[in-house]
Length: 201
Image 1: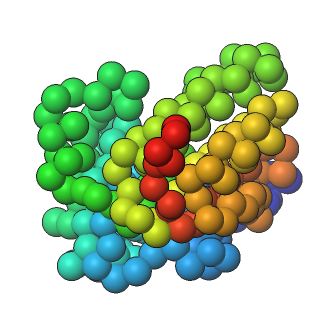
Image 2 (image 1 turned 45 degrees about the vertical axis):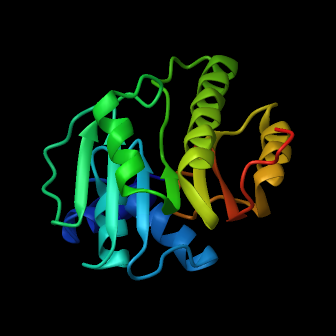
């Protein structure tokens, strides 16, 4: 197990990414073809910045990545990135204004995770709370036909969350990247083809 973990850790260092999590997004993109040149991406839970860096590279100079995290980061980003230290539950007026001016987005990605306490059901509930907030933001900011990727800790609410995603997206898939640690309970939901908010929602 240690060798398995070290492989992605060392690979990230070698390729100048601040965290091994970049390879999860890389796998997601390879499987679901999420990015296009010139796209606009909203990255939630972005620190330390690996997903933002990968996204910026994929969308190119003509694209743009708006990223946010409750924590700050020392990572240097290219010109097509704007990073904000933000709490998505209590977004500042400045950040809401940037969401409006920069959006709508082609892709919303969320690697947000709660501070775990080691109590399985509490950790799962907090993770789902973040996932629900990420979906709320996605529904406010996605273009029609856009995509959404969100991390959750597997638990009893997964099926209900998937049902909710199917209201808003044409296709919904689950995915466990090979680069996720084997003991990790994380899984990713991928919503493709945003349908908009139903009139009766």
